[in-house]
Amino acid sequence: MAIQEIIAKVCGILAPVASFDDASLAAYQQLFQKAPLAAAAIQALEALVKQVKKILGWNPRGLNDKVRRDAVRDLVKDTRATIVCLQETKLAVVDDAIIGYTLGPCFTAGYATLPSIGTRGGMIISCSDAHFTLSDIHATPSTLSATITSRSDDSKWYITCVYGPQGFQEKLAFIDELRGLRPFVLDSWLILGDLNLITKASDKNNLNINRCLIGKFRAARDFLELKDMRMDGCRCTWSNSQADPVLTKIDHVFFSAGWDVAFLDAYLQAITSACLDHAPLFLQGSVASARKPSSKFEEFG
Image (cartoon, rainbow, N blue to C red; front, side, top):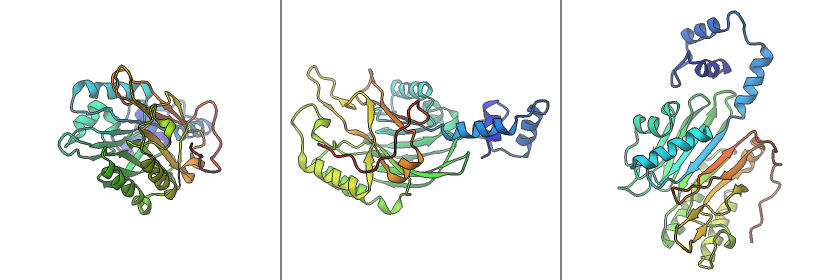
């Protein structure tokens, strides 16, 4: 999609989910007939659009409750997220009405879902139609993946939303499930979500840890050639909300070397959540200080 289509949607002459056809082009040209945008201005806008990658990942512990849907809606609005990945929706059926209410009307044209089993699990990946398209949907019991295509420059990358299981044997099977994603992904790959696993002992505030699972999880991460993105904000992402709380970092963002090079300005923040036990993860570009590409995997203690 050309930058003209994005401008038309922003200016209100084209609906968020409508296609940019000849009539839309005529309306756009009419809007700027007296004072057309200079080529330099259009190029600057195109450069800005390329940076509009604001990814929100969160386990809201169910969207089958209006209070939780409202919490997600408010967070999407506050962060101006353009890609949203939700885990544990607890919804067997997700339709345009749910997406439109929870995320906004611009998300109804591009979303993929993994249904819950009863009230267990369930995931959503959705992107703003003004900026991206979603294709090549691939689902496994604990993952939901898709190709993200930028409307501004047709660049493509792969995203995987993950919700990991609880039990020990189930976690072992889940780690093998992650390994099985390798044939499907693109060189530029982002994986995020509530994995229900830690990568190092310091990801938990007590000594009740399983080093076997840590080792297998890290081995799978290295097999997939993924890196763990540095996170600012709260160190842990989940709390059991007790008087003497258990705190862990079980929500993660991993990325491939190809994604690392393509998005040097990526900045990950854990947002403190007063109402729910999981901290939302907010990944955005175009921050003040861009990071350097990682030259090797981070060594964990």
